[in-house]
Length: 622
Image (cartoon, rainbow, N blue to C red; front, side):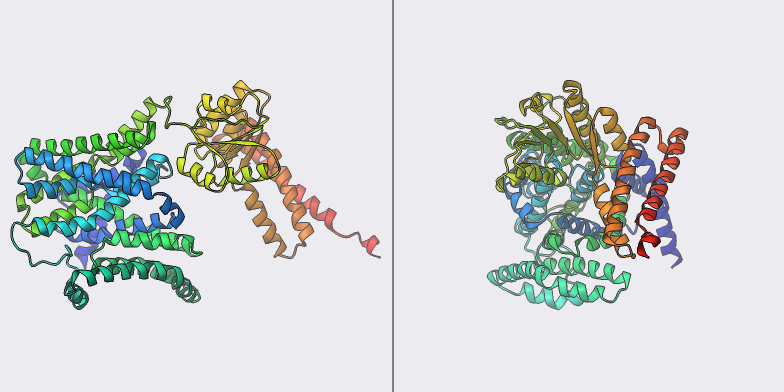
């Protein structure tokens, strides 16, 4: 027990010490966890013997992550990605496997070794890429969506890859088609029965499990979740969330499917459930801890003694792996119309090997396709490629900055002009666009997300694909003749850039801008926006109104107080915007703090006066 607590303290302490430093330096948490593992293992020798078992459990973090990603995607969105999954993802896997295998065969590897290592090279790290993109809010960009489609296609491809490995074996194999120790313990009778089935029956069982996940997630989860949550025990939420993920993982593993793929499917099925947000809140802490341990285990597992004994061939193989994947991904990015930052995000973001490579290498070694030494060297190459991934993301960001003035895609030719231009068609922009159009006013919609534009067109609303920050596209949309510009883009810097440019070329234009928070309001105000809407402000006031109504206020009184709060707070924002200093935290600005406290007192006085005016006159009652 003492040893376990000591080891846990070392892991947690290393993460607490090193990861925040890496984040503050701009390298991201993934590189921080990898560095913590290297310090603990190869450098100080504080960990190492338990790395295999730790990685075995920490891989569950990848499963949890894909479940959370599935919760963010409804089936309609997933169906819209089918071309990217089959086209972009399938071509990446096939081309990378072929080119890598060809190069390895030329270097003298046997064709069996080259085939297995080519498949390993085709896989990228779902854990690192999705974690990094989520932290940097890249997942909703065109490059992020394309990267996710490729990663999902790779997870699906793991299944046929594992089935193909025994066919490449140099000797007959009696091992099961499952590469892990899943056939041990209580699951042995179930797996033994499944392995005794003929191929057609095994396929039917596989399809039955997938159907059960889809139908069960749609029809069974609601009554089960309601029953569990009726207990009003907070920990039961974590129990049901973890049970959903663990049960789905087991079902998919016993029929030979990837557990990550099964839990992703379960997440997609539950994406429209009313329990989606609760599931996400219950799962996210476990996902973060397990993924952190997984990255630390990768850092610990790098055998620097073997690397030091023969460094240059291993480094050359690592660079060769990255180079091959960059070439293939760059060609595919060009073919599928990705430009600018999206092209670099796909090309460099997926240029590493992945965690499923550890599984594939271990299975190939078990089947005697790879020797023990070659398998260990391959694991080092995989680990090194994962280690340089955060650096590749930094390079992608730098290259994107160099090409920032270049088009990020092939924009649509804009053949319409309207009195209202809407830049950005996310949740905010959609509501504005519908209200204005249904009131008989022509709008021109611009958005850099091709999928969002295509979905909008499916509902009969015309929009144009293009980057709204580009002056030429704004001019083509009719900026010189427009009466109103609505800036509804997600990225705060892009919003400021659009407002500043529009105000410069059209001083008389009325600009309505969406803001994320108070600081963003001040930035947009100084850039020249006329009406600035905090994205949660109106909904928060409405929620407060409902609270007042349920605390004894009449509907009229609650409505009046809400209107008073709205009016006074908006006036206060303009006052504070004049005192706000860019780059200086608000709480360190004495003039800002003093004025904010005065305005809070004015708001309280206004609400009290509202209450006095709302009281009935006693003389009138008599």
